[in-house]
Length: 333
Image (cartoon, rainbow, N blue to C red; front, side):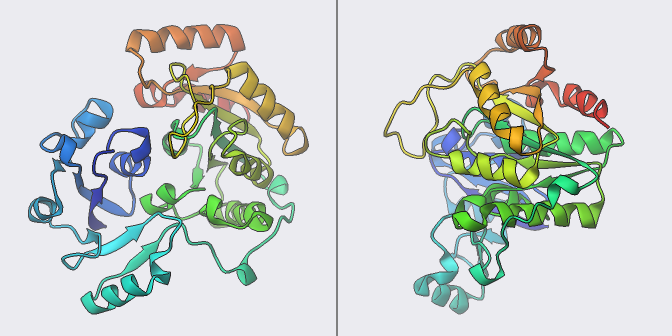
């Protein structure tokens, strides 16, 4: 795998640095050898992110990153390749293209969709697949949907239930997912069809018993509703794992322009299950807890409360693992 340094200056470990956070936790494409964030320089990335050291140093600048980690990939400087998850495509920027050619490096736009002439529309294919289709959705953006989906796919496979992960965003694709699309960069007419075709391809090539689809945004989020609805229509869910951050009071936005209240667990379940009545008929089968701003005692109490109130297996995937979710899914086979 290519050795890579992540540039996340001033934002590592925060919601706004979720691509960096995800790559530090999980990557099949890159060996992460450092994170550039001068505000946390000298610390261990795993310790900052999850309270457990992982040997990935946080450094102050690119010079230190290159000297310590000897990476191949970061930004178009010092002979490094550039991987971007932006909506602006570097491969269409004449200045970047010229610089990349001059320095002999590669540009990769993770969010760049296929040309319209090659894009697919909805064809009602996933409903007929002989495997479970389980999207990991949630009550907000940046709430742990991708991380939980990756952990769940690995846990199912380890338990003897072959599972394949399908990405729907730039981070999952950069992490090395074989299957997926940059959903929020695709024109509306093709969002469902493009994701549907990737889910079908994932089944045809890997023949899993379960396909785990990364969620986007939230069906009740005023800024990101299209992603969740497209995922539900493309996946035709057999069941849904739903993520929630009990201590979060307002929604996450890419810009701090509005304070929009978080939904309750009951409200989000109602929204999701109403929408899936015509798309797969899959109900919420488990609840995942994001422990942001919570102590372990608070998480444990929340788990007990939710399981008693909703009758659904509940766990913090990072602290508890996905064993409860796996057991629930085993009962569906």
